[in-house]
Image (cartoon, rainbow, N blue to C red; front, side, top):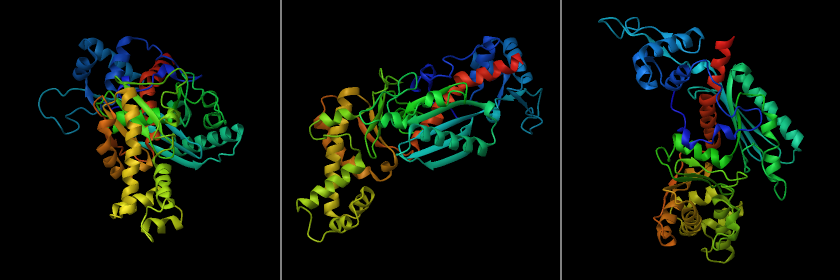
Length: 420
């Protein structure tokens, strides 16, 4: 199994909502937990390797492994000689924590979309469901739609429900430690998080509801541009800005889960809103055309006849069109102000632009880098483009669910098997 997110960069399991376990249940002996923790993501291992990795004596290690094998948690593999990999002396016994021992569920519940992924403990996908959510749904209708698609994903995966070790759902709202979201002036947060902590509480030993930008930060720390970095911002930048902030290796939340809410940009001169890069590109292009600053009959004006779209403007800039290039430069200056505020607030080493828009955004980042340095007294953070694509929230939800499975779900499964 691949590694999961380092524990100090994952939202705490204790932050999970109702129905989740705040701490791992105790297995019968501490040595069992130490061997399990060593075996997670390890692939085949020997007792000697487990002894060193778990810091146990040889006899205690072998006893723990044999107990886990008898409980059908750890599997004994063919020895090296039987596998054709060894020919001299007595071959060592080999063991493995199987990836199909259990599974996790990850969800991305946006305003108008729902993604559900079921993976095994090695992160291999077992099922994926994507659906449209009607933003006009009542809370009850949205809850019913989420459960419908969750059931469909689980059925497609073939995993029994009692083998789901953890579930993590990302929502476009701040999320408090109990999994709830605070009231929003127009009800947006209540709609995107319609009581999911309570709704999903029986689905797994640990259920976590997290802000989508927090999960983007988890994904970048596990798989992306922040691997090995302890101070960074994952900035979801498509329609509206949302920031997942990691400081000293810890994802920040706040009293109401609102650390990454970017309404503060409504009050920043030269930014004036939390609009993301997509709307900003189209706004700047529209202003350029309305001011008459674009060339008559320009390609940018032709684009406007069918409706300005950020992806088309970026593609036009890539051809060398001077008007589209000016839009890119002005958007870069806008982004530089955003990054300067984040740099002054959190002092990150990196700011990573995330989401579907990141695929074509490098020219805007180049323009932002050119003007960022004078806006800061602190050293300027590196501005990087995420390579995790539109499904970054799902990727972070998988990472977070796997960490919860390791800390809570797997020990609980072991305790159940040993006590049965």
